[in-house]
Image (cartoon, rainbow, N blue to C red; front, side, top):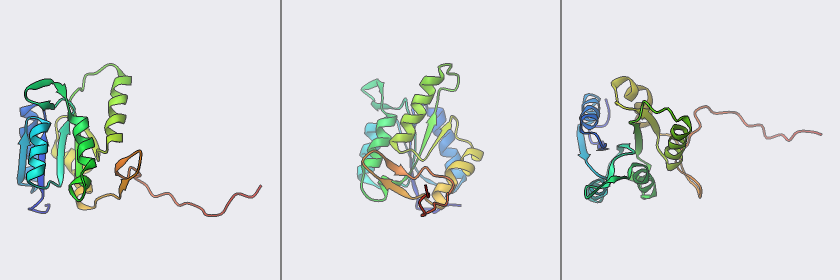
Amino acid sequence: MFCPQLKALIALSDADAASEASRVLERRGISNLLSVKCTYDAIDAMVKGSFGLFVVDAPIPMTLSRPGVPGGIDFIRFIRMCEGEMGEAVVVFLRSKLGEVNLLQVRDEIVTVRDSGANCILNHPLTFAKFDEYVAPDLVKPRLFLRMAGYTGPCRRRVKIPVENERRKS
């Protein structure tokens, strides 16, 4: 379905979720996959090669020596700081906490991930339906990419709204 040379990096804290995401991507024609256990390994892989798709969650540790320090959102920011095609790659963020009661905390996490430059924010697990509806359109037809002082990432506008050039008359 997709370009066979598209490389995907999966940085998920849960091994079962990583294998499920790998299975979904392979079934959709993305066979060049790399799964890592921490963001340190992910950055090392980024130095060695270029990736067009990233699947990340928040609890992925920064390093294996410090497993309690989550680094997923900072890793998305790092991706967006990269120059070239890899900095504009599609980034899928998977939320792992489905049973949260504190809606303010959930909202803050979603806003932080959105502002860090993720293309889409989905709940675990990554399924075929979610991939086809939310991820595939960005792979087939990438959105306009913005680099500004306060935001670096894909354009978040979904609908084009016509803008009138005439000023209001008082």
